[in-house]
Amino acid sequence: MSDNERWVRPLGSAGTTEWSVAIDDALDGWSHTRLYSAALAAGESRTVAAGEWEHVVVPLSGSVAVTAVDPEGLEHEAVLAGRASVFAGPTDVAYATRDCDVTVTAEGGPATIAVCGARATRRHTPPFRHVGVADVPVELRGAGVASREVRNFGIPGVLDADSIIACEVITPGGNWSSYPPHKHDEERPGVETELEEIYYFEVAPSAGAPEAAGTSPVGYQRVYGTDDRPIDVLAEVRSGDVVLVPHGWHGPAMAAPGYDLYYLNVMAGPGAERAWLICDDPAHGWVRDTWSDQPVDPRLPLGGAR
Image 1 (tube, rainbow, N blue to C red):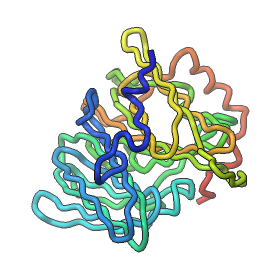
Image 2: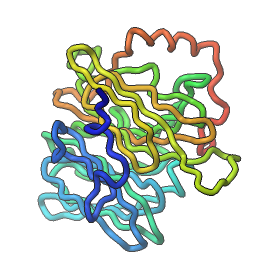
Image 3: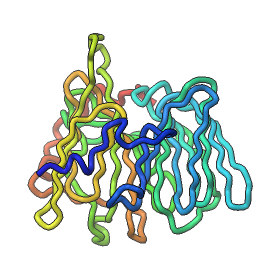
């Protein structure tokens, strides 16, 4: 039986009056991560009350001003230059520790924003940080038709935080990512960490694709479980859609030929260690060994070399 109804949130099905996407612990079975997204007109703002959540602000398109007010009432500010779209290249981001209210305002024109969050037990100092685009590592992962671009703005070793792990992935049309299928739903020291995960998608015609009336760019996402913890998701995804991964093997994320696929990942879990440790599905892990004699897709990085 498909679990799409529970774990797939098409655009418009998980929003509020202020947010086009609102994923948080109000959802049954969701505890550790949150994601809010909205399209803002020039000068328009959105505020997230932090409480016990830390946040990373990611401009999906346009430029934004970010203000965080800490528990002492001090304001911390940064203007994020952003980008034209998620397919144009990486972006700078802003981090605010827990107990900081965060306000995001579109700067100089319209903007689309994502505010990623994770439940945090500690406050970090400094409470607010601006991570410049030059400090965002861009990794070309995989090879051949499993080539993808990973922008690691919010992972351990790049961003100091309590629990949140976040990154974004670009998969050129016709390629597979989140592959081999893998999981991170058990605490096994040095091997695997327990992390729930949010996938937020955008899809666009590949460079050079003809402009056709009625085009509806589409990709696909697979999640499946074990006998002990079953889950069965096979989702057709479009821009603004979300797939939630509470547990289980996830992948591939498939970019249909002619359409590039973007996803923003937000992860966190109950463990004391902030680490992104994964375990491949043993039925498919051998695929990694085939990459050594295959070139990386020459279309990457999609936003151009840096």
